[in-house]
Structures are given as structure tokens and as C-alpha cells.
Image (tube, rainbow, N blue to C red; front, side, top):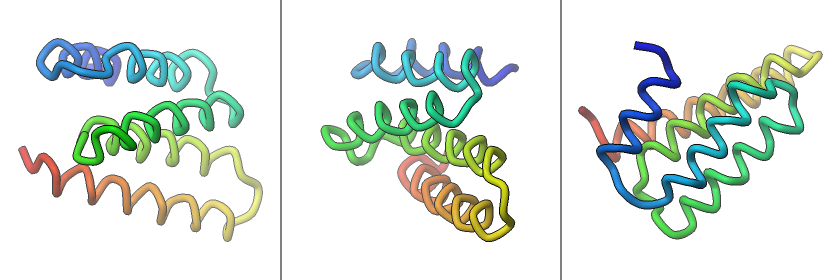
Length: 98
């Protein structure tokens, strides 16, 4: 199943903040440059302000961070962002280990 299909399935099964997360998902798949990826992170971060346990928003930030790392030029910049992505992914798994 594609990432987009999983996103849509999640939104059907888990109510709340659907519009915000779909907008963030749109940025990731439609505009893979750093400015739109950062917008996706910001949208998911806003969701987390209201629902800090939202595993899907945490997971989406991890995915955005991975894509952002690929837009960086130096190894150190990439490594720092990869570490941030890993931290968000770990939090997402802790919130929803299924």
C-alpha cells in the first residue's frame, strides 16, 4: 500500500485534524522542495500542540524530516536532520506501537 493510501486510511480511522494532516500530506507528495516540506512540518506541529500523542502527526514529521535531510548539502546537516527524524519516529512508535 502506498504512503498516500495509508494516509487516507488513517484519516478515515482516526478522527480529528484530518484537514490539517491531509494538507501536510499534500505538501510532501506534491511539492518535495524544502519550503513546502517545512510547511508540512509546521502543520503537523500545530496538530501536536493540541494532540501531543497524535502518532500520525509524529510519524508525518519524521517523514518530512527525512525528505528535508535530502535537500541539505553537507553530511553534518543531513545527519542532524536524520537524528531529528529518528526522534519523531521513536515517539510515534511509543504512542502507537501497532
